[in-house]
Image 1 (tube, chains in turn purple, cyan):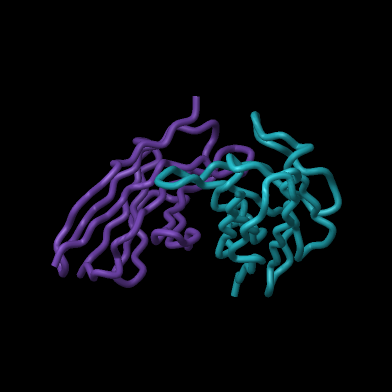
Image 2 (image 1 turned 45 degrees about the vertical axis):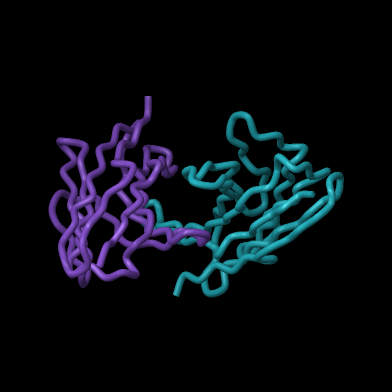
Length: 109
Length: 117
């Protein structure tokens, strides 16, 4: 079957670093996406990885290991506005996104 | 780039009425659009995949006669919730896929919050 696992909730402190992990099992693989979703709003695209390694984009970085079926999203210099849910999604062989349930990130001052 | 609009943003209707939601890709052509539903504190649930000029592909458990999807152009897809009932109250979100060799990134509209009284 197809499955995406990510923690339900995480808490971090403003200014710190947090890593949100995601493991995936899908029928085929065409890339791993991370989206940010604030409460009551639609998701916004953060990153896409299809090759192994780290992709850095400002305060956010995303890592992929295809052999391990593993990705993480790294958020640095956390700000209060980073409080949101972070959705991991794997694109399967039919180019369909298989979504994780999301990780709710709570930032404390 | 890759902006998706959705209208209306919020709608309240009486039970038994129909509601149409529009999804537009503003600065690109989208051969494929997706319709999702999200209940409070739950993950996105894909309802259907909409391809321009052809019938939508519905996910298992989604009634195609209740949720009518029309993708008449490369920039517009509509979802009509027919004979809406209170249990249809939810956050409906569309996304449009930007084509590419990678299969394309999905960009989301802002969502429509439907409340059926």
